[in-house]
Amino acid sequence: MIKAIYPGSFDPVTLGHLDIIERSARMFDQVIVGVLNNTAKKPLFSIDERVIMLQNVVSHLENVTVEAFGGLLVDFARIKGSNVIVRGLRALTDFDVEMQMAQSNRLVAPEVDTVFLSTSTEYSFLSSSVVKEYARYGVTLEEFVPGSVIERLKEKIAEE
Ligand code: ADP
Image (cartoon, rainbow, N blue to C red):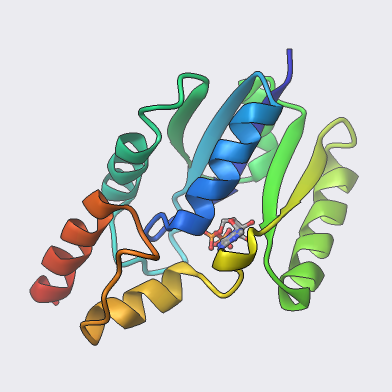
């Protein structure tokens, strides 16, 4: 049985992330979406908000769960009994960072492999940062994030 972890900030989850989650769910027996609680970053959404938004949008996938984690990704993988980390690749700019992360993770946890899924073309430019920027300037978001996330984004931006 192969259990994969798909880690990220998901601030907030986009259709690009959801595409990677759905494709991973077809490929692996179980997928744990790991939401990074990184105290060094200042996210728009709290860790609990990010987890709940993700849980809502993956509820149709029965082999996918969502959990918050802090600290080292490989430690989280070990605790969960997972040997596979899934990451999405959009462009060459992602490659450098992702390669470095995969190599350093392998140094500390050789039993854990990183699998890269290339973005679906329609999401190749899409990031959580772009979505937040669009939300602030009132750009229509239907093509970029799930409907439930649009509502939360609007509320959050209004609070700012
Ligand atoms: P991080 O802060 O770890 O980069 P993100 O939430 O930005 O977290 O992204 C999580 C993962 O999803 C990363 O591997 C990232 O490359 C991937 N990803 C983000 N947006 C897309 C997209 N539009 N298409 C494919 N993969 C994506």
